[in-house]
Structures are given as C-alpha cells and as structure tokens.
Figure 1: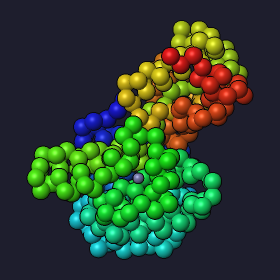
Figure 2: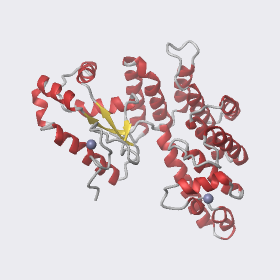
Figure 3: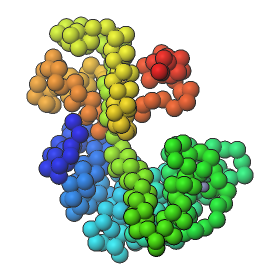
Figure 4: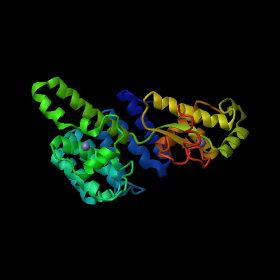
Length: 341
Ligand SMILES: [Zn+2]
Ligand SMILES: [Zn+2]
C-alpha cells in the first residue's frame, strides 16, 4: 500500500512508531521513515520532534547515523520557516565532514532549494573532494556518491560556471536519458526567461522534477519490497503451515514470481524496488505482534513492508554483474536476470 493523502501518511507514521517500539534495534530506520511520512503530510513540527528524539543525548541507543538525522532535521526546519536554526545545523554537518554522501546531498540541496547557490556549490564541492577518488585517477564513483556529482553539476550550470574535471565526470557517469548538459543548461534556464516565460517555467519544473525524484528516494529509503523465502525457510514454513502451499506451490515458482512481480512494478514506473528475505521465526513473531496466525495470507505483504521499513531490503535489480538476489551464487544476468526481452 502506498499512502497518498496526509491522513494516510499520518496513519503510516503512527504505525511505524508503534513498530519501532517492538523492534528497538531497528528504531532508527523506522522513526526516520515515520518522520518522512510526517513531512509528506505537512506535519513538520511532529517530524522535528522525531528527529530530536533520535538525537536525544539520553536516547537508549545512540543513533547509528547522527549526521544524516541532523541533515534531515535541518532540511525539514528550513521548510517551515526555521531558517537560522537550519543554517546553524547545516554548518555543523559540513564541519563534521561525514563519510556518507547522503547528509551532504541533503544539506546542499536544502541550500539550493532556498536559492543559496554559491553555498550549495561549495557544499557539493567539499563533499566531492572529501569522498570521491581523485579526478585524475580512473576511480569510478559509487552509486551513492553520484548524486553529489550530479547536484554539483546542476548548481554550477545554474551559476554559469565552466566545466571542470568533476563536471566532466558527472557527464560521463550519468545514465539519464537526457544528457546532463541539456538538463542543466543555464541558457535554457535563464536566458529563455526574458523572452519566453513559459519555456523558462517548463525548464525549471524539469529540473525541480529531477531534484524531486531524488529527494523522494532519499526521504523514502525503504523500497517497495517483495518477500523472498530461501528454500530451507520455505520448506520449514510449509511444513509448519501447509495451507500456505496455495501461495507457494514450489520454490522455483516462488523465485520466478518474485522476479516477474518486480519487473512488472519497474515497468509501471515504481521507483526504489527491493527484496526482503523472510525467516520462519521472525514471521511467527510478526504474526503474534499483529494478533493473528501465520496462516493468514494477508499478513505476508505486511510482513514484507515491515521488514523493508526496518531497513532489511536489498535493492533490485542487482547492479552490473553482481550476484543474483536468489542466492544461487551465479551472476544476476546468468540467473533470474536472464531472458530480459
Ligand atoms: Zn556537463
Ligand atoms: Zn537467481
């Protein structure tokens, strides 16, 4: 289920907060997701309360990613008028120089969205210089690092800065169907404005869409996940609950269904897909926490969603020649990724 109205987002946030109480070891992931739903519902002050709770010095578990939480808190604060506080937190995030690209992207985009382009550029550049392999080497930036290069390219194009080596690298690693130079072309953005406001608006909304889709991926780090049972777990599940055989006629069919469902979701434009792996004991515990029996088939998708919200999803499809998600040990292309039409 994908929540859409503010009320849906609030209900989902509250469900995630309850789930966080059941799984304290995953509370950080769950509460960050809850905060994202509160932001989407426009309940920004409640989101701030959650960020503060995660950052509280007397929290039971110190946060695993405090800088990421501070970055999200700053971006959220600035969105509802707390500019000075947001700026102070952003300065702190930059000074902390995190090794994770995500907090850098969040604070740089927050500056960018409030028209602080020179500061946004400085922030992206600091991050790129800190995290990426030197631009005169053949090192390839990771998928997590690329948004830094793309964001930097976009801001520098908006500022009219000439390309440097990092910009060239951004162009090189971009897989967008529209080349970055066209997408971020400042002539199309600024000079068209004077004689054709409609085209200016169209260009700006295109860039905002690019930014928006990345933001969405960031604020919803939990994919739409499909449930996978490894063969030994499925065997154990069906031995304990034979009525579930209607759902899972064979392990081979189960694996084929996972791949085809994900391809259908991808074809329908669903971003951020993933696979979660079930185990019988955790499924039984989940059924008990929901006050129902493991034989209740409506529980299976809820179990998958909850595992994903606990940060247990692995992104699909596997990148490049990475191992197949099914655990066969073969490359994805030679396994379930084969036969792509
Ligand atoms: Zn370029
Ligand atoms: Zn496979």
